[in-house]
Amino acid sequence: MIVVTLLSKTNKEIRNLNVLENKLVINCTKVAENANSFAIEIVFNAKIIGFRDHDYTWKDLKVDLKANEFTPKIIKLEDGNYVQANINQGIWEISKKNPYQLVWKFNPEFSKPITEYVGTTAQKRIYQASNQVVFIENPTLLFSKNGALEISRSKIPFSATACFTDHCDFDTAQNLKLQRQLFKESNIKVTKGFFLNHFSKRSDNASYQNDKDELNLWQLDGHELCYHSLSQSIKSDEESFSDFENFEAPFYSNVWIDHGFQPYNFTLFKKNSIDKSDYENQLFSKKINTLWNYIDSGSATKGVLNQLNTNHFTLNSFSKGIENFSFKTRIVQLFKNIIFHYDNDEQRVRNYIDTITHTKNVLIKRKFNSILPLIKNAIPLLKPVSKVIFFWNSEKNKPFKVAQYAPLVFKHTIAEKEFYVFQTIELVDFKKALHRQNIDSLIDEAGIFIAHTYFSVDMKHYSGKMFHSEGRFDEEVVANFHYLGSKITENKIWNPTLSELISYFEAYNQTIISVDDNGNIYLKNNPSLAIRTIH
Image (tube, rainbow, N blue to C red; front, side, top):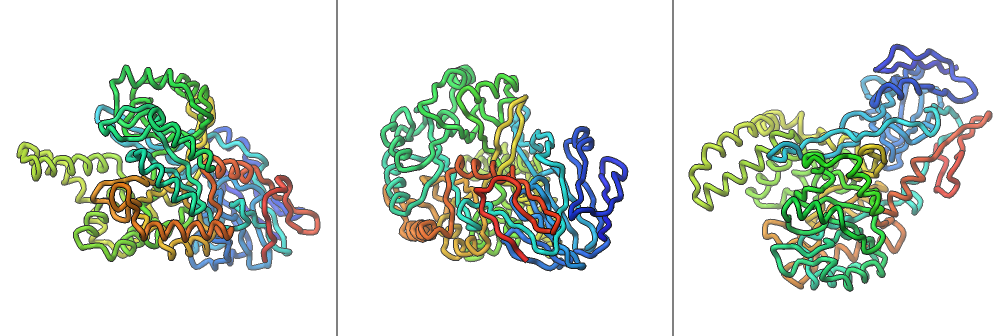
């Protein structure tokens, strides 16, 4: 007989129970009512010897486990039992140093991160999504010696998933058409941001106001159009708020991606004293229910693409991915990665931005009164950089803060209404990030990415751009998209729009698994989802 001890970090011991009828129901409803974030510690009398990893393979407990909502919650015990969760909710953690203990966490810090900009300097702050834990069924451990049940997180059974969300900052009428033609011949679908109104410092900047016919063709080709705020450049506050309050949706579009520092942005509305209820009601009145959290898990490069693989989001993986760049470029990119992803301290991110500004003032504009502010902002950056330099071996493989739980899509309540929020991976180097080696690795791991892209970016310091020059594709990038498209055609990669992905995840997250008296694990609902028995 298996004996487990259940402990809550927010309560005293819940109970000490024997497992009966092949299952152990964990009734923690009262804990969930009183705490938005809590953890249940489960101690087995049999040793944990293996777990099912994010890539649908068995791993020995030689490494630690973190299994989020989109990773199987399945382990093996030394006595021959398979143990799995009945629901996908929460995060399982197991330490190789304590092979008898499983910790089931709900809403730990950084598992559902959201950005907001606060104060007069619009300083970045990361906070945890507001999301009360409501169980679709009491968390339960299922025990069986007949195997476990695995559910596909992809509509194509147990395949990889590639989802693009493109920011239209640099789109023009010409390159919009060229992008669409490339994706059509590559059999690739994307969620394409658009500016509803034309208001830009660049006269050729694309918008729905000026380029409606071309953008409508994107929809006819199967792409999803989504709001990228409402205009490229920022109007006065009065005009901006008027635009937000009075805009008419040209068609159904439920996805909103913040652009820049528009005052009505999801990440800025509280700073600008917009009432929460008024804000969410305005979004709902336009059928908008999906928002970007303004967070990237990291930057895609060679060996860095799968958002479920937290080993991708380390300084070591990133530095290996850029090793063929010039020494100067490697130093600049690694420094930026340390500040924005490894350290990700709100004040030091602000210091970094101000340091860059004052450096340009001194070196380019010859404004020598920026020297003291430059020094003042640069000094705080020495702390994380020095830590990395002197303790590289111990720090290089630590997952970044906002990637440690591999968040993809989660719910957030602004006032009273729930919204979906999604997290991305920054993907601007299409040569490295979409190299066939990365695509093949994504397939092997049945991985997933939700890319934050700029298909039309024309800034010189970006490498691996889609366009070599205005109106001319980079042929290596084209070849990468063709290769990706071939794997989509072969059903080795599912390529949904963002809304299609979230729709599938909605069903996936409502799944309930159970076990019968004979120890056979079965799917209790959602029979349309792909499943398989594993041993």
